[in-house]
Length: 249
Image (cartoon, rainbow, N blue to C red):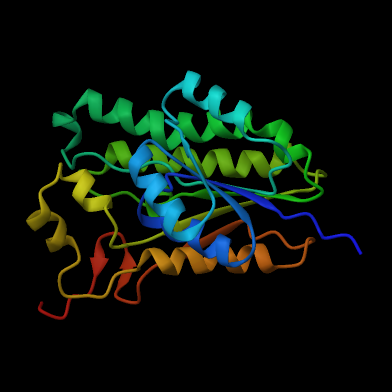
């Protein structure tokens, strides 16, 4: 009896938050997981603890993406485009150009770069699934969030275009749009200001990284003919980006 081929999953932004939780869930599901992110030491720690293969990847660098793709043997059965994040919360009249450039590089161009670079490996799989981690900011807006929401609106447009361009191919495309989730997201957005970051989640139970990882597991467990185009996940206390119920209010 031959042993079934072990499926390979690539997770970007895997050094923390959603990416790290998704990688761990996929390892438990039996995937050979490639942890991809910029922080080598953190990746090596996670891989040593949980298994899988750590590979340094900066999605904002074309050279890094190309080198990464060359090091990944095909086929790739799952690609989770998770790298990204938000910077700053300034109004449009005070926006910082470097913040927008960094967000666009990671959230949008990075997603496109990695997908393009791994295209041969995805096509080599009998069935591949590409999961793009977007945000409720991909369909809503809020004061101070114009740069980030513009990026996540772009992720939504790219995800929908993937579905159109790959129609008829054995590739599924899903966009997962989380709402308020407690990860390093706010800490990065507020440049390490932990007090300001904690205030974002005060008075409610936000989503956790494990909630999004479970959604990824569920999507991949569905029959091959099923494609979940878009999955919006919010904490019960959140109805919109700016409509949140807090126990202390």
